[in-house]
Image 1 (cartoon, helix red, strand yellow):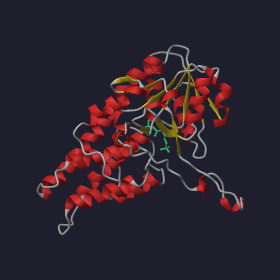
Image 2 (cartoon, helix red, strand yellow):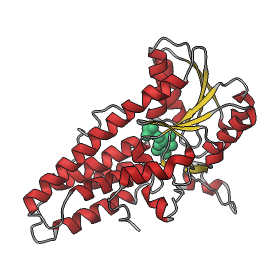
Image 3 (cartoon, rainbow, N blue to C red):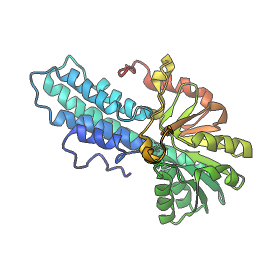
Image 4 (cartoon, rainbow, N blue to C red):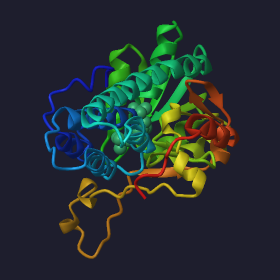
Length: 316
Ligand code: RUB
């Protein structure tokens, strides 16, 4: 999960796509950086002088986009590279622009994540119990920063069935010396009375201020609301969805039922495996970004500022 992830050993952009799809590469921030890196790789290895480069680049971006359609971070990373390349340029310029566009996105994405931790950590006070869900690097970095500032913190970490990313979070925070209590997802309400704040990650912030994040987040937000606990999501602004401004909805990724149980053991049963859910704006206290804490009602203005003049609908 470090800042060095894109310098990995991949030979081909398709291998990156495969590993995003099978979740070897996961988490909204990381898949975005690796998506940009995959287009960089595409340009580095490009040898097909017969084809129209920009069209093949768009096709490669579409293949990458289709791997995890809920996280707008990936889509925005790909758009950011595509927007950086001018289709009427000479091939060598387009190739070097693809590489430069990817590098810029990756650098700015990491800066954004680092930037938001200042605001996230300031919300976590001495002696707080923080509830988090799944495995969000942005949320973890906020918690670690508060811990490194000398605050004594306890973390409640829901394990996040079926892929158990919450276990990664629990180990990571415990290894850093933070007191962690891990609970099954369905115990979230039971222990919410002991929490002071909820801090989770984000795959997409839609224009109505709602949050798409790991399935179970919505229930945690409802539990927090019921218990009077503030609920925050960490979202670098590249996780805000400009396309939802024009009414194109965010799809919830449905994954293989086999991740939950062997369908052969349940004849006649349909196993549902949504990877994400949508938490409405009314349950969100604030969105922790690199620009400060954003009120869900201010999301359209943030989107309009960030994406002004950019082409934002490619894959629909
Ligand atoms: C991970 C998840 C994370 C967000 C944010 O889901 O929902 O909360 O992606 O992560 P999955 P980050 O494991 O299915 O990718 O803060 O690291 O960008």
